[in-house]
Amino acid sequence: MNNIQNKAAAKKYKFNIVDVAVIVLIFIAIISLILIFDPFHWVDDWFNRKEVTVEYVIEFKALDDNVANRVNVHDVLIGEGEDKRVASITNVETRTAFGWIPNHENGVMEKSVLKNKKNLFVTVEVDSVYKEGEGYFIGKERVAVGSQIKISFPTIEGTLTGYCVSMKVID
Image (cartoon, rainbow, N blue to C red; front, side, top):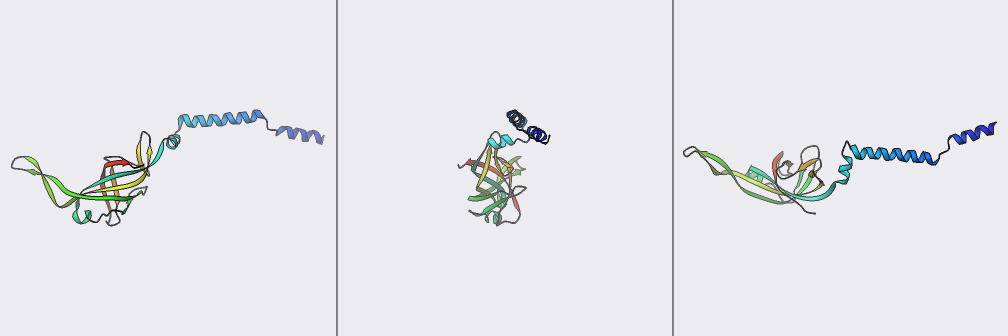
């Protein structure tokens, strides 16, 4: 009788090919549902991303001369926000800042040089991720021509706000 109970217990836990097939089908169903619905876009993020190095130019308008002259090539930039992106400056260019001033005599706007002000153009090289259909991302922030960028310079206290005016992929 003891022998019969041992055989029944051994038969009760026996693993066969039907069990394997059911487990595989359940696994395939779960994977299919994830691929179909993909609520967090993990699949898209995984397959549609490419890591690249991007060079972009940030324009800072009408900065004081003493601020614009303190930015140097090879300085390391630290971004603002949740993702602290780090970039290296590859070129710095300053240009005379202009503004539009109303001429009340003839009723038109005239272009005028802003005294002690410079427009600063900083070329930056940074690693980023390209996501198909979405663009280039540095951390979680999307960067495109026209996008606003806040940057901290090591030689300037606080952050400066500029705009991306040019962008190209290096590799």
